[in-house]
Image 1 (cartoon, rainbow, N blue to C red):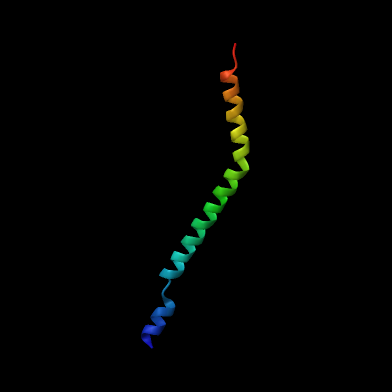
Image 2 (cartoon, rainbow, N blue to C red):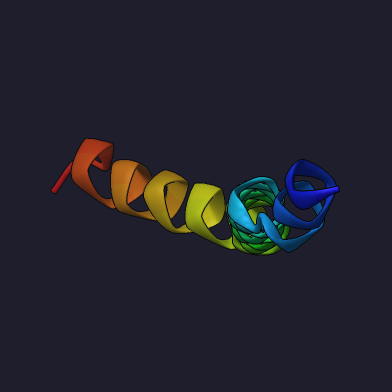
Length: 56
């Protein structure tokens, strides 16, 4: 009976799951941010490249 109470009170697994969920949410946020800014950054680098390559 004592071991069952100890097993129920154990929180290490719950903490690991919480950290895993937080890491997953951070990954999703980074992916969404990168996809939202990806086109703008690509256009910026293309514009800079065009200005550098343009003859003077």
